Length: 232
Length: 401
Image (tube, each protein chain N blue to C red):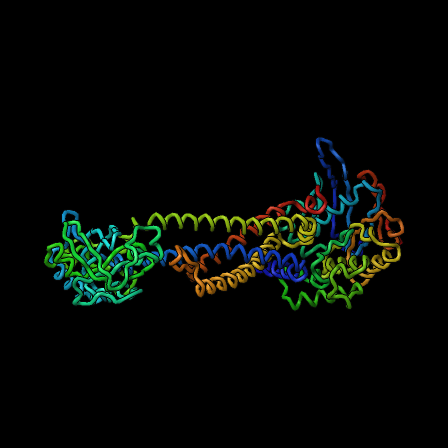
């Protein structure tokens, strides 16, 4: 029995790159569904296609073929402007190297997206404050990225992604540049978001121990899904 | 669009606030110098033009000059014409003049010169001749057998070393004049006039009546010079003079001076345009390079901004704001430098030809035009590189593929 609504449906998702006449089959016929509130870890070795899959899911790239819908909306064939707006309002994306704007404070890095959504400055600042408090950085709102540690930067990146309360949060190896202790802290933040706000999370990782935070693990190898298991 | 502007502004503001201050200062100073270069030369040329125009008006043509038609040597019944022209309310002064070529001799020295016959009282209203007497006095209404000698004809004065001169002429010296019609006269020097202008200082002045007698004329004039109340209304007043039935050659000072200074003005105008183009190209190139390098360095950041949903337009707008910030401060600094220099040069003019004082003219219209041109240029120069970079797709911008 389905407890939660299916929000992502992927069918035969394929992504081939043509580099100097050589076709690289990064992803082949991937099919799966994701329900609201799931915390999914996509696992795989380097070159297995996990990042390619996340980029397509995060609307940063398009599949060569296959179907991809979010809440039954065909997001692959949306015009670029609408994909951009969808990314802004519905999806959150955490990059492995934080991807913060160095000249902006933690608060500005977060609230600029709310401004883009059309919210007032006051509302945007409140949103940013709330999001940064949620990741434990309520006291570092005015710090710029080079005044923050790696873990703190990644938490700002997460705050940026969750401030707009996205339907789905995508995280591309969010702990790749962090030590084990800090990685644990970041993963705890993600886990809490998932538990506290029923946030749907799709995270790419190559560390097996990261998967213990996820509720489901999809394993990729050479562009194919080789396993898809729920964790208890 | 409003959201784009809002986000662009916030993004630009943080970039400016936390960017490299020394680099920003350097950019602003360079833009300030470029702006000063953009306005300084035109202001100087404008100052030179004002000087030449002033000289041509003051001594040669007034605002309007009436001359005989091509077939005639003189305007007949000049007093009748004077009366008609004086009846116009816009006219503030009218004077008739006669001119004749002559050779002047003092001691053993002889020079050729044009002698003007003037009505001294009328000249007070139309020219500066009565006010440029460097030695002695100007001609009076009863001046006969008296002459004013231009300063360049007197040894020791500026220009006398370039041109032939009459040697050591002083007030009270006697000068022999032989007119083109063969009449010889001896005049007593009443004064020496110095207008720091060849047209005045290489000539001599006598009373109108004196020259009228020498030439055997009765009421004729070589020219009638007209001064009007408001500069710029020459064409309208000229039309009114024609409407009064004056059937002579009537020209505004602009028309008359065309041949005299048109070439010089054109040359200076060309220099002005070339200087402006070079300044604008340098300014545009500077802004373009700054923004281009900035966008290239931040290509990945721009890709990320796009990836998280910031629109390309707001990113472009942020670069336009950054360019505007630099250029507005640059213009402000340039204006301060220009006005300071212009005021200094107005107090301490550049000496041209040793006697003419040239200072830059501060023209609000020209400044506004330059400000708008430079601001417009900076918007374009800031927008183009940002447009190029934001056109790249997200994957290419962030990961180079």
